[in-house]
Image (tube, rainbow, N blue to C red; front, top):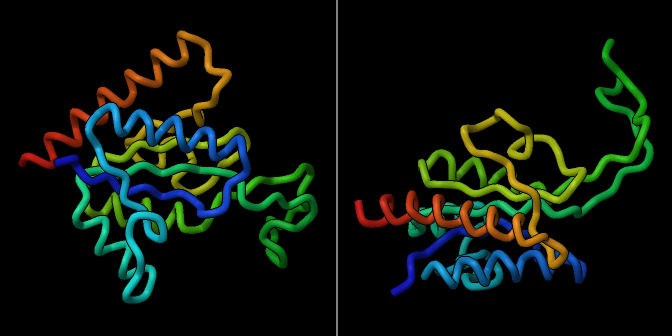
Length: 167
């Protein structure tokens, strides 16, 4: 029986993002771990947030995949305040669900792995917000050294997951 792992990932991905997700799911499978994701492996019978909590409670770890879902080219931050500023360059945002789901996983004290695409920042993707290191999203052009690091990240994390699961 595989150990269940909560996956926080948007449902709509472009081809490069889909490739990155597949690399992560392949690594999960190699480690004997089973991905659980709302709308993919599990389907809601109640409100989505309650369903996320229900799924997460049955998991021994979680992975947050910060993929670009929205690119904002113009805008104003903190409009109407004395710190109001216009965007000088576009910002890239992940799905809001990444932050909600990460908060649930964190509150359940589950081992969390966080991956993000270049340009994704804020919330769970800010360095130092949690004790979790933020990793670069894997891709097919990873060098041999990067692949070795990627596998090492999973080996360390899955050890924490197994400790949690068999506790």
